[in-house]
Image 1 (cartoon, rainbow, N blue to C red):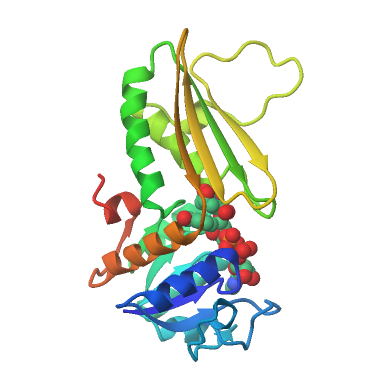
Image 2 (cartoon, rainbow, N blue to C red; image 1 turned 120 degrees about the vertical axis):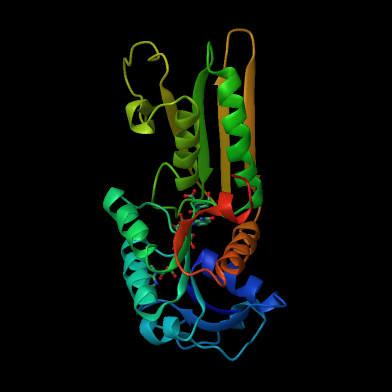
Length: 265
Ligand SMILES: NC(=O)C1=CN([C@@H]2O[C@H](COP(=O)(O)OP(=O)(O)OC[C@H]3O[C@@H](n4cnc5c(N)ncnc54)[C@H](O)[C@@H]3O)[C@@H](O)[C@H]2O)C=CC1
Ligand SMILES: O=C(O)C1=N[C@H](C(=O)O)C[C@H](O)C1
């Protein structure tokens, strides 16, 4: 399985390169980043102490064309452009980038009508199991429980709430037969009044090098249930991405997420 990684110089890119170079099956054929990225022209494994002969390039077209599957952890505008190139060359795509607007999500679904795509806000096995736990907990704890979602990430994260927190909100709203847009509360300040019954509140921390914490609280009268996931490293995201790439091998087209990859539907 020939893998191209875009965002190669980034936090996830470096973890993906390490995971791919240590994988017995996947072969790193391209490491791509944008003009001005610090590692351009250098060996993709150099900083990891794993020199591999693949140089980091900004030639996205050639980098993608050489691969069976692109793994993209960049920014929404870049990902959408890369997806068009994948489509042109018939290359599968694993998309970890978060922060898409509705038009961006529609563009991904449209691309997936021609190529196979895994698009998921969190590639870790643990978080995907938490999504299932939330579905169960919400079905049992809806009456009389106020639901709040908390997330904390490093100071360089640019989107909020995290894609994972938003997906948690969607899972919860769906389990209640509602749309998240109809019940989400993203900010509270000043004299807010009492809590809106049935709302799903979000709170966000940004600081230091926090890899990614997520907690959902079900706050009842006399008891509180908290379901928490904490990432201590980015490697679970990278290993999940490679698992997703393997899942796509041999598929012609279609939009999938990690629930499909992990057979959790
Ligand atoms: N789905 C998941 O499991 C996870 C998703 N993420 C998401 O992945 C994305 C990247 O996160 P990090 O690696 O922490 O960010 P980062 O800022 O460390 O790295 C992003 C890299 O992408 C490159 N880049 C940006 N735009 C580009 C473009 N148009 N073409 C080529 N390269 C481009 C940057 O130069 C940088 O090297 C974020 O949206 C984040 O939320 C992060 C961790 C896990
Ligand atoms: O930017 C990050 O770091 C992360 N982003 C993803 C998200 O927005 O949910 C996944 C993980 O929490 C780390």
